[in-house]
Every structure is written in structure tokens, then in C-alpha cells.
Amino acid sequence: MFIGHWAPAFVAGAVSPESPRLGTLFIAAQLVDWAFVAFALTGIEGLRIVPGITAMNPLDLYHMPYTHSLLGTAVFAALFGLIVGAGLRNAVAGTLAGAVVLSHWFLDLLVHRPDLTLAGGDSRFGWGLWNRPLIEMPLELILLCGAFAWYVRSTKGPLGPPLILLGVLLLLQAINWFAPDPREYSALIPIMGFVGFAIPTALAFWVGRTRWHKRQVGLAVASARR
Image (tube, rainbow, N blue to C red):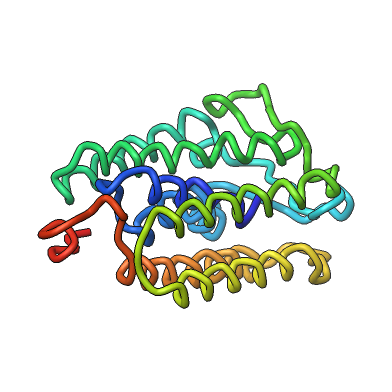
């Protein structure tokens, strides 16, 4: 799962006028992967390249007890939700941000081979849709495009910025799917992951500054506090 992780961000932006802005929700959606990139670069967590380990990518995510255990993800979700809620002085915003962070583990559960844990123990979970590209690929596109359509219908503002964001997301996903797989691990792999998360997130902050929820009126729109 790559761009599909941002589907909950679009959903959270659509459901309430009290939602954080889209850029914040994009950070939430990939927060544990941002952390995994940092942990992989510093040796706290680990991945390696094993060609053929799944049909869709060669990543052996063999050590992710802090970022990709359900407990670890829940801790990230709680902390991020508290930070957002306190920063915006809005419990609804904090709850939605935390829920988007937590969604990451459950979406990964669909596609990963058994490399996810509940609390960093030996039991591993993953339903393995990365070995079923004819299911995984349309599922990811349906999740993202459906959530994007809901966000656009629930918010007001120019269509150009969100359409540019969607186009970049689809381009990055095409690269992820169809570019040649790496044959061996190097630090460039997590660095490329960082770039792949940063570009859409920057665009999402731009989109969030151009749109507001349709149920926001009067001073709530003018203040654009989020």
C-alpha cells in the first residue's frame, strides 16, 4: 500500500468542518512510514532486498517492532492526536488525526506479507495482497480515488490544486509499480521513500490552504485557523 494510505486523509478531511487541514492529515497517514524511514537509516529498524519475496516488490521488512506493530502505531496515533488536538484546541480534530495514523496498520495488514506484529513479538500478520496484483492495484486506486472524490465534493475551492495533487499521486504510484526493482539494499531506498512521502505532503498543504469544508461558514472560513 502506497497512495492508498492517503485515502483516510481525504476521508477525514471530508467528514467534518472541524477536521485538520489536508497537509496535517497527509502527515498522519504516513507518519509511521516517516518514522520507519528514519529508523531504517539509523539501524533501529530494518529492511532488506529479497527479489521475489512478493510479486509486487522485493522488500523484506524484517524488523519493524516500533513503527509497524499495532501497539506502536497506536502510540504514534495517540501522540499525534494529542499534539494536533492541543495545537488546534479541538478534540475532534485531534481524534480524526489520530484515527488517520491508526488506519496505516490496518491498510498495511491487507497488502503486506506476514511481517506486521501486534506488539513487536514473534507472531506475524499480513494478508499478502502484494502477491495478488490484480486485486491490490485496483483496490488501491479505488480507495484513493473514491476518498479524493468525497473530499472534493465536501469542500469548496478551486479544482486545480487537488487535481494536481491527484495527478502527482498517480504518477508516483505508477513509478512505484512499474519502475525496475532494486537488486540490493542501499540508503538510497529509504531516502527515496522520504522524497515520495514529502512531495505529496507538500502539495497537500497547498491544497488545504485553498479549500474549506462546505459546512464552514462566516468567521470559520475567514479565520482559516487550520
